[in-house]
Image 1 (cartoon, one colour):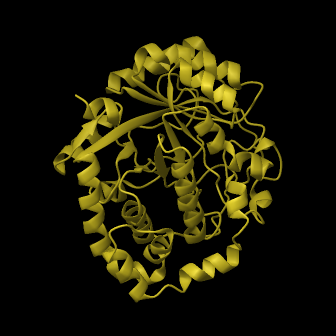
Image 2: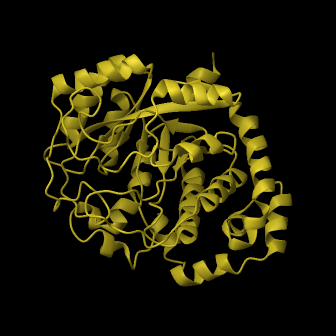
Length: 369
């Protein structure tokens, strides 16, 4: 299990190992044909900041080699903001005094009608983590409702058992995203003081259960802003490599959520600049030319425009991060504040203006046409 691997590392020693990388290490990583996790350390280190242009050029070349000049578009459908967790950084925190909503069948269908009008064939179903109000049976019903309308269904919900993931896969779920938030086991409980999510190891083992269930794709990521972003990103990369070795038929995706304003006003403990996020995106591409890299509407219009050619392969567009946000005008609290509020059509045009093509459904089905 990944638990056995992660316990071999001391957080502070690993952090120092990354920060101590020299320019010679960066140059060696750039010249390597098959980059290792040690190379990844160099590419995310401060020593690499003067080599961003070279990293970007290589990242662009590798991305076009594997994915072509294509950006996949996706949209999250928030089904519920009910949650039993007390995550201090999240607007859905159980302690927050907000309007709680879980969409019923008719409400879900109304949301689908609007989302389909945008042109989407890829839907990401999102809920807070509430086993009673948005648990496995609710998710099964939601998947069956949306399946006739979309060619690709992804989930970002509470961790489930391997058998539950397997059943959802049989119903049509293609991809499951689960974020460890931070791999710093000594600090994890400070951010997750109560609720099922407070169990660090259960969450850490979730991608293994997804892999065991035979899911087509697994999405990983850390919440940038909780702890040192370089150290957390290294653990995320190590987790990716571990899973690729164990579940070699599965595809993988990495996301880059940076903390955005929300109810509770949690202030990030680690600040990442836009240039550093570009560096991280390129570092992942140089490490692995097969992994999909995704950016959400958490990021600004200017930033998202600039990363189209730097390694990103998918992005959300027109997102609403509250239940009923597309059709119902529920006024429920958003999970995070949207920073790029352009419509899907505007994002599609932006992508076209850069000489790329926007795709509204799954990579594999598109590439087989």
